[in-house]
Length: 89
Image 1: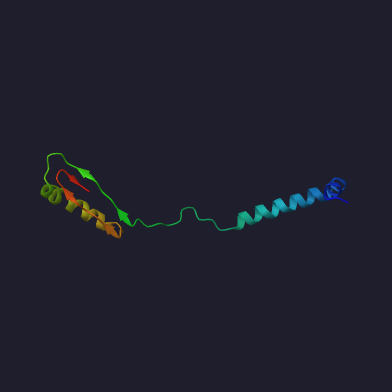
Image 2: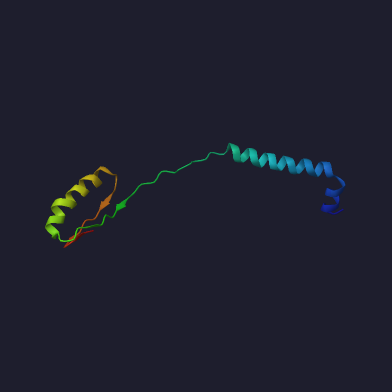
C-alpha cells in the first residue's frame, strides 16, 4: 500500500499526525530563547568635518580636541584624526 493511499483511507489519523507535528513545532519555537538585539561594539570611529577658510591648526585646536574628548567617552578602540587644511578627517 502506498503512503498516499494509506493517508486517504485513514483521514482522522493523518489529520491527527499533522496537528501534532504543527503543535510540537509551535511549542518548540515558543520555548526557544530569543534575543531581540544582540550586543555589539563600535570599534572604529571615522569623523569628517569641514570648515571652509580654517587652517589645519585652527581645525586641530577648535574642532579636533573637542571631538576627541567626546569620542573618548565612547567605548571605541581606535581613533584616527588627520588634520588637513580646511578639513578634519
